[in-house]
Image (tube, rainbow, N blue to C red; front, side):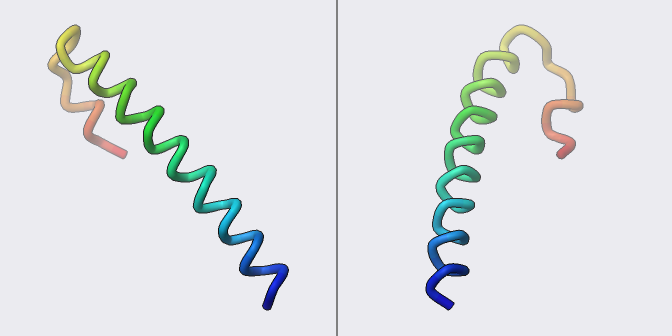
Length: 41
């Protein structure tokens, strides 16, 4: 249980970081191209 918990916490941390990166990427890309492809995912 303890190992899984720490593993899950690390995974959540990674996911939140990647989420922030994708949000920044979307904010950067949106004004350049108004393509719905960005929202698919």
